[in-house]
Length: 189
Image (cartoon, rainbow, N blue to C red):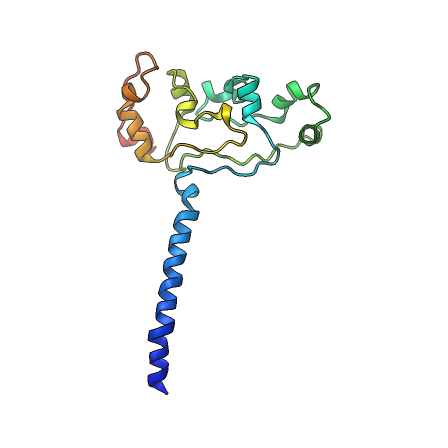
């Protein structure tokens, strides 16, 4: 009896356990890519908001909605009141605008899901980059062509260092751009 149990374990159980472990690792590796490096991450938002329409067709400058980007380390997600600057009169009868108006009237902050995120252990200042003339598209891609915003660039240490080291080449359109700092303390504070 013991030999047949050992044979069963070696022939069936062990390979099955190895297969399940390997399959779990591979699936987790590929399914968590967006969480690891962010590329392709496009969460479902509480409102269907089209950057293609607003930033593309209507050519609304990123800084109109993300107003803190020139003065703050953070780009800021616009308050519902910013949206209502236009939508108090424009397209009020559309289902998504009706939902937006409800948030506004109830004084509830829209629970947008953040798309672009630098790890918590790294410091990034939007205003420094924007005020040096680095356009949003360099990190965020052509948002004006995206119906649903997704992360197109890696926000990893390697990607940031590559840009900092090669800024004159990568950002040739930016006047007088110099390589950025590459010392640890610049980002890890």
